Image (tube, rainbow, N blue to C red; front, side):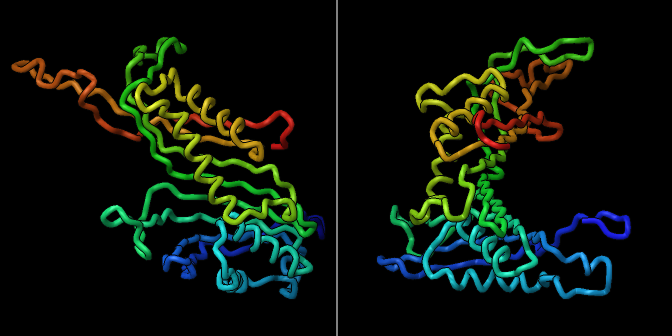
Length: 307
């Protein structure tokens, strides 16, 4: 938007609105719990607040915060974090005439039901590791862009990994190897092909199930069969196989972005003049280090999908 010879591109919102929600209507007396960290950005026609002393078109960020809690309260039935993000985005883009796009980002903490003596606890939870992430962009027309993801998924295998025949020059000291540990703390995000709010599946907790299924495919591809594993010639090749497996398995995933830092476990060799083999590395003792680490990321998409 331009005025007085100055172009203004603006948005405003509320970040890090934390909300916990318990549903207590389980037929067996069980409770269900989620914890969400919600961030909202609104694209709206409110240039008068920039050009003049006129705030009449601004939706207060405190109102956005309150709306999160109101909408959480109104959700009498369990819903996925994706559905809640779409619900919020649809509210902001339709309720306020001046708002034409709402972008909602949510991080879901990994609270997991505990088991005591092999039985699921009715109301006990423990905190897991990786987070479930969502971004929903909802336009006033009902157009939708929906991305889900997993952040901080730590994976490691102690063998079946190597790296060789790479570029060598006068700065290279890394030796070829067909035996090393492979470890990463992966961030993955996948964009669904649904292009409108009206087109999303109506099945209850559809996206929650899909999240678990995508995560399983990623891990199964990384590790390979439990008895034998699968050899990884590089992080790049493993990343590609993981992303391709997701696209093959889930027709409603249009693209997937994977970021896989190569977290190193360095062989430990210790020696002194008196004891030259104090610790002699035999694929057993390592120094874990994540600084510096390799950084590998890529996006895989169907040829027909829009990036």
